[in-house]
Structures are given as C-alpha cells and as structure tokens.
Amino acid sequence: MTHSAEPQSNRLDRSVIVTGLVIVSGMVMVVLDTTIVNVALESLSTELDASLSTTQWVVTGYLLAVALVIPLTGWAMDRFGPKPTWITAVTLFVAGSALCAAAWSIETLIVFRILQGLGGGMLLPAGQAIITRAAGPDRLGRAMAILGVPMLLGPVLGPVIGGLLVEYTSWHWIFLVNLPVGLVAVALAVWKLPFGDKAPDRDRLDLLGLAVLSGSLVSLLYGLSRASSHGGFGEADVLGWLIAGAVGLGLYTWHSLRKGKDSIVDVRLLTNKVFAAGTVSVFLVAIGLFGGMLLLPLYYQTVRGEGALNAGLLLAPQGLGAIVAMVIGGRITDRIGAGYVVPVGVVLAMIGTYPFTHVGSDSSYLWLSVALFVRGMGLGSVMMPTISAAYSDLSKEVVTRAAPTLSAIQQVGASLGSALLVTALTQRLTHELNSHKIPASGGGTDQIGSVPPEAMPVVGPLLADAFGYAFWVAFALTAVIFIPAMFLPRHRPRGADAAPAPPAGI
Image 1 (cartoon, one colour):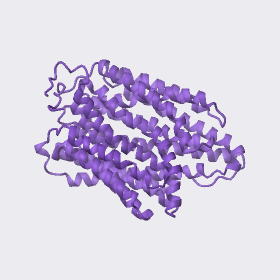
Image 2 (tube, rainbow, N blue to C red):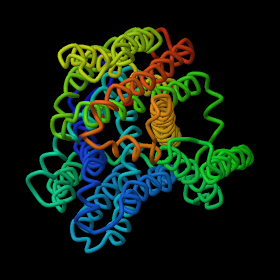
Image 3 (cartoon, one colour):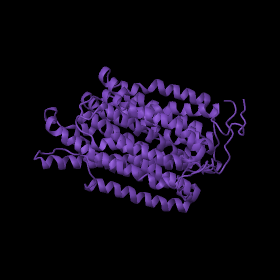
Image 4 (cartoon, rainbow, N blue to C red):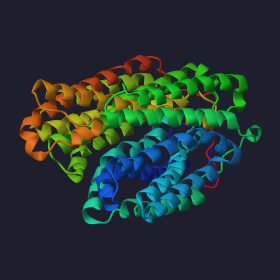
C-alpha cells in the first residue's frame, strides 16, 4: 500500500521503522564482530601458533580494509542504488566470516579478515544514508536512534558473547556466529528494503580521488593503530604514517575542490554550516566517548582481574543508559533540535565519567555501575543526535555523498581517541612505576596486560591511578564537544527537502 507523506511527517511510520530494523540487522553483526574478535585475540594467537603482534593484524587488517572502502560507498549507492550496495556489503561480510572460520593459518585469517572488512566498511555509511533518505529531516532524531542501538550496545554485548564463545567453544565460532545473522539480514534486505534512487551523473568513478582518499585514511588509521600498540606518538614510523595521511587528505581536498561534485567525496558539502558543525561534533564525540569505551573493559580486566565475560556484564549499565537516552533524545531532537539535546548529553557523559577519574583497585562496583548508567545516558544523548543534526540540512540527493564523510570522520576519531587515551594511560603508568623504582616493560596495551598476578598487590594501585589519569583526559576530551554543539540546530530541523514520501509496497 502507498503511504502519504503529509499526515505521517510527525512520527515514524511503519516503512521507516522496518527500514531501520533491516539496517540494524546487518549493522549489529558487524559491531558485535569487532568487539568479539578483540576479546579472542589471545586465544587466536595460541590456537594458530602465532605471536600476539602478528595476531594483532587480524584487527589491523580489518580496520585498514574499512578505511579503504568507506570512500567508495557513496559512489556505489549513487551508481547501483542503495539496496544492491547494502546487500553486496552484507554478502561480502558473511562470505568473509565463513572464510575466516575456515582459515588454516594466521596468514589466511588475516587475508580473510580484510575481505570481511571490505563488506563491514560499507555498512555504516550505507545504513546511515538509507535511513536518512527514508525518514526525511524532520524525523531523523528518532530514525537515527534505531541505528544507535547496535553502535552503543556492541561494545557492551561483544565482550560477553566473545567471553562465552572463547570459554565454551572453539575460536571458529567467533566467525560462524555471523552466518545466521548475516543470512537473515540479506533476506530481510531483499524483501523489505526500498531500491532508492540512482544518480545518473555518477557513472564515472573518480579513481584518482579514491586512491588518494583511501590511501590517506589507511595511512592515518595505521599510524593511530601503531600509536596505540606502542603507547605514544613519538616514534618515527608512527609520525611518518600520520604525516603521510594528513598530507594525503590535504591533497585530496585540493583535488575535490577542483573536480567538484564528480569527486568521490565532495568536500564542498562542508560549506554547509550545519553539516560542518555536525561533522566536527561527530569527530569529537568519537574521540572522547569511543576512546573512553576502550578504557572501561581494560580497567575491569587488568586492575580488577575480571574475565571478558564479567567485564562485559559490568559494562551493561552503560548500554541500558544509552537505550533510555536514545529513545527520549531522538524525540526531543526532532522537536527542538540537537543544539539543546547534545549539551545536556555532554554534561551527563562528564558526570558519568567523573567517578572513574578517582577509580581505585577496590572501588565499589555498585557506585561504578550507577556512574556507567549516567555515562550511557550521555552517550545516547550525544552520539545519534549529532549524526542526525549533520544530515538535517542536506537535500536527499547529496546524503549518499555525505555519509562516507561522516563514517570516515567517526572511524578516525575513534582510533585517535583510543590512541590518545592508551598513550595517557601507559605514560602515566610508566611514570608511576619509575617513581616507585619498579622497572617498566613493553608499551601500549601490551604493557598493561603484561603485569603478572603476583605483582598486582603492589602494581594494582599504581595501575588504578594511571587509569584515573587517563579518565581525566577522557573527561577533558568530552568537555570539548561543547564547542561544536553550540553551532548545532536549536529549532525543529528543516531540511532542504520536505520529508520524502515512504516507498510504496512496504
């Protein structure tokens, strides 16, 4: 049956909700997979008889594949349509998962993870573009709240599922678990997703722009990954990769300004003040809040000695808080604009982070759980409203070109936040150990995980102090979000187009 746009412009009609749930079915698999694999790295290293530094490429290779393919997604949606692009991405991810489960060595697993990343990297920008075009500008807050569920619950549920799979099954199941979910996602997409419009002027692929932009993102993310594993930005190879990435982005900007709308990602979209403010907000949110999400399970596992399963359960209050806030925040964002919602979310996130700045080796789990619930409310009130605000002033024709920009910014921001906080944590720990005449070994996350259990009575309080310092950095990075939040819309968002009519036949 056909729906009329007018009477349903104030609420999410059935077609938008169905579209959102189809997108979520694919995205939840990807987000969970990322955290599950992180939990299983040590098991993979043992089972495949590889060093931990080699096994780390299971994560790094996937990350670089994501960076490689994000810029291609917008062109693919314009050229072939959003529905075929989405189905191709999910199929690639599922095929990669099946091959990963069948891997016979660490080298083959890394290659298959790269294939998996090519599918996974397209899902976030494609999903955002599809739901944005389906909902229209006046309902974006609530529509994006649907997409926020897997993004915020993944880091909570991933360690729990990963811990269970590692403890009670073989490592193959961390990839096999994606197959039924992926097949359901493909079936739902074939059945329910609207085809969407193609752009007839996007037949030719900007190969030079794709090579420069993808190469720059790969270089940046690899440099940030090295900074995390080494616990600092000072090493020549880390700086080399980061500088190469920054120079590449500068070159791409010049190329895009020359080529205009035919470039793979049109940087002129950033001349839209609302989109620019939303993009900066998304970047800072990813740095401050996603970086902090790395510290939380690390604290529970290293300082408190909890396994991956218990650490995941202890993070559950954050996920619950996020769900509550997303349901309420999405409605309020649509009514009065993200400019009112996001600052409140930043305050909540800061209140929830503050107790962790004073965390010890015996802090009350109940008190920390209450803090995490408040922090989760902050996450839910900040992340999806900033993304919906970024899209709110764009016409639906350019949404597919804007989505890769936001996805790339989010990916770089999350990696930068992780690198900054791991650097703060490890350098503070090294300082604490040296001041107590205790030799420090290793760097980055390896240094934190290498403390022997018998040394914890002495090192534990010092490690807790280092976490407290790192959470102060996270607290400060969260506060910076206030600046771009001041430029977000403070009225009911009105896009360049009226809300598009939902597709017929759903």
